[in-house]
Image 1: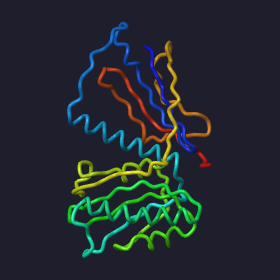
Image 2: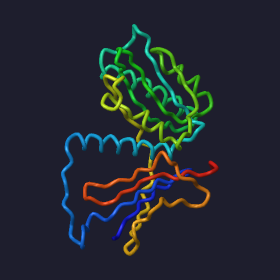
Image 3: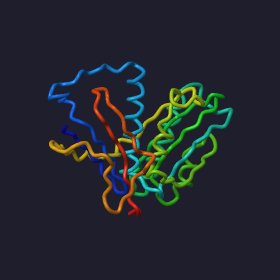
Image 4: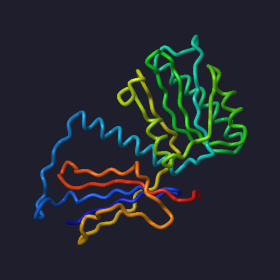
Length: 238
């Protein structure tokens, strides 16, 4: 039976999706299509948010960029999410201005989070330039600024899941607001149809890469056909 393949190509990773064509059911007849439940749709949307974030990370950031946490002093915590977003807007405006002074373009991914005990903080992924740590502290005046270099486990797979969490995916949160800068392009997938080949029994891996075993997902889609997605990572980062 025909199957299709999508390949998302990044500098140090490739994401591969393989699935049977939805046009054809058994004997060339279109298969029945089931409408997802609200719960299923919620999971699909969250999974897509993680995937989009992961693509933006793999395309636009590197391990020498920063993961940042902006915390609040207890007496300066915002009253609600709108207040936290106003603090964010003031901060990012200052930060963007400082980057421009240094002829650099600011790129960011952030999640504003309210913890179950009432503490607010902002997780931020940002491209690093000289003196970024000093600039961050100068722009954020509501509390402590903590930062570290990005870890590359799974080529940002875990990081994408962490930065996109919300109150439905993490019970430790009461509320969350995820957003990114607009200057984070991602490459379109390379698509290919395999019309006369049987379903591949094993994931394909090109030379110079290895399969990220934790990324492999195989199952049956809503049309009743096999589906596979996985990631291959470059053996030596470039």
